[in-house]
Image (cartoon, rainbow, N blue to C red):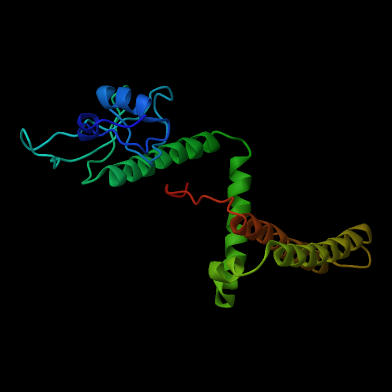
Length: 216
């Protein structure tokens, strides 16, 4: 089915992802531009985000004027932009920010969140201490298998430190309090290393989406 010239002027093209027939209906209702994917509305979670209908400068002119934005039936609106693509990209950024804000808000109500955050700070401290080794660009240049081998090596170091501390705790007469504390601190120093490499593997595999909200 080909799109008629008059439909094309209303914003309907052959490359609508779900076909020109559906595209024609969306052109009447208010539509999404072709080859774009606006995220679902994070506020109502039911409405379908749409762009406003393009308007011509005057009768007979095909160039469109005015700003473009994505809006939802619930009243949510994205930033006004100069193009459809920019409007959808801006809407998606706002949606991701809203979603992650909700995630953090939910996390702060969790009894385990303070411990997760405390451990994340230990991980970051280790990364900061090794920043000179290449930082994120360095691990992105490695394969997941190489990173896994490094993680296994760090697990071995953690097990050795844990064994030393455990032995000292089982034999308090052979180790004074200061020595036992040194072994305990060695365990804590090793704990973030293997998880850091697991984080790097997740990043290399494309599984991380850095938060765009302030740290809590």
